[in-house]
Image (tube, rainbow, N blue to C red; front, side, top):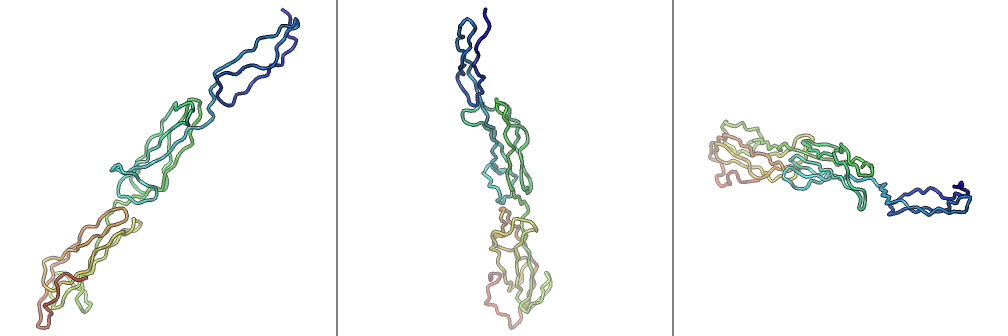
Length: 231
């Protein structure tokens, strides 16, 4: 046959998915014959990366909010997902991460890739604040004249028990303190604190006991005072 006289058929660059890509322009030989157009398709184009999202839950299954205090381990769950109408997820090797101590930031590892070869950017979650240490109640005993009272010694004075609720350095801090001071007017084998000492992570202090308290009533003692009941 004769050679090609005219070729104005351009290449076509496709940037979005198309069911069919038709040729344009003219392909004509010297004899005047013109080629039929051709088409190619379908062409599936996905230029959008999948996404990784991070959520977190505590050991009991309840949701954890970044920056809040808890006394439980926290598991960060990374979810790999493609955009609507995308090529779909081809590979997801991104593991969940369980955190057992305070951590500034948890970054995903592994790969989240769609069928078009797009790879998701890493995701992060944090900070995570974990405090598993109970606060502590301490007690100081003094007689009414301000002298330190030592358990097991004898006094003629009432004894005031002063309680302090405190958290460890770097802990979540005290959220609730309803522990009140007490007065012992009579002898006691032991006096135990009452009320609650709780930190922001939900840890509750153990009660503290003090004793024995040995009080010998003098002729001037006021027996009408409520024993171990004042604050």
